[in-house]
Length: 196
Image (cartoon, rainbow, N blue to C red; front, side, top):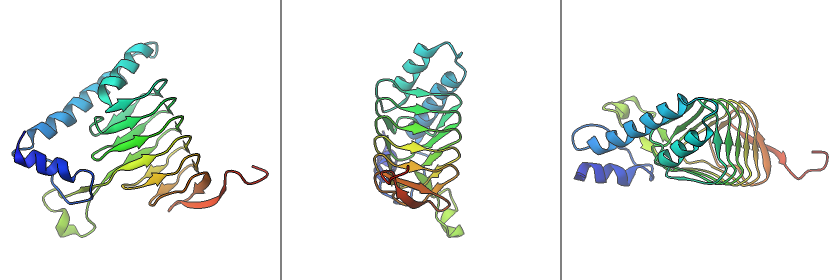
C-alpha cells in the first residue's frame, strides 16, 4: 500500500475531504472493482441459486450474519465496508454507497428502492473541483423497518425498533422506537402509542 492510500483510508470515516482516485490509490480502485465484480455475479445469479447468492454476500461484505436475504438487483460502492447482522431482508434495488462503514443490525427490513449513502460532496462548487468528497458512517440499529424509496444520508443513525416511512429523506439521527416520515424525515409518534 502507498502513503496516499493510507491517508485516504484514514479519512473515509471521519468526514474529512479527500479524493479517492489517482496515483498511489490503485489499491482503493481495485477494492471498488472487486466489489462491483461480486455484485455483478450476485445480480446475474438465477433465482434458484440461493446458496450461491449467500456465498457471494459472505465474500462481498465486511461481515454478514445468518439468514440474510437481498433481492437483486443490489449495488455497492465497495461492499467491503458493509456489516449486516442476522435475519436481514432487503427487497429490490438496494443501493449502499459504502465509502465509509455501514452497520446494519439484526432483523432489519428494507423495502424496494432504498439508498443508504455514506458519501457526499461539498456544497461550495470550488471545493468539488478535482473530485473532493467526504464520508461519514451510517448505522441502522436492530429491528428497524425502512419503507420504499427512502434515502438515508451520511452520518445518520436510525435507532432500534424504528420505522422510516416510504419516500423519506433521512438527514439526521432518528431515535429508537419511533415512526418517522417525510423530507426531511421527522418523528411523528412512538411505535408504542395505543392504537398502533
